[in-house]
Image (cartoon, rainbow, N blue to C red; front, side, top):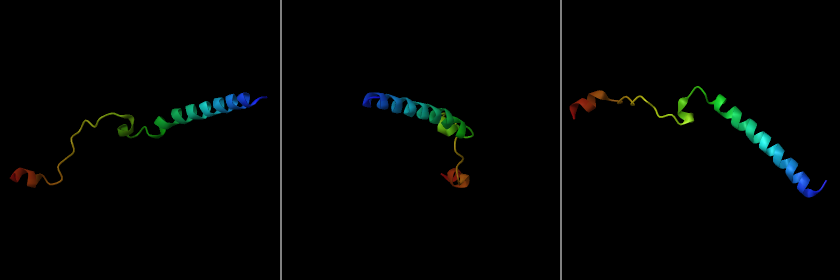
Length: 55
């Protein structure tokens, strides 16, 4: 086998590892929608609503 054959086999292995890693990624982060790019629909609660009422 020549050097280009070894490079091709290494590329195929790297592509397979990358595909497995990308398929595994979203399942590991499924409980939080923030990692998937969805915006938060709820507004953050003010920490001190009594201060906001005085203004």
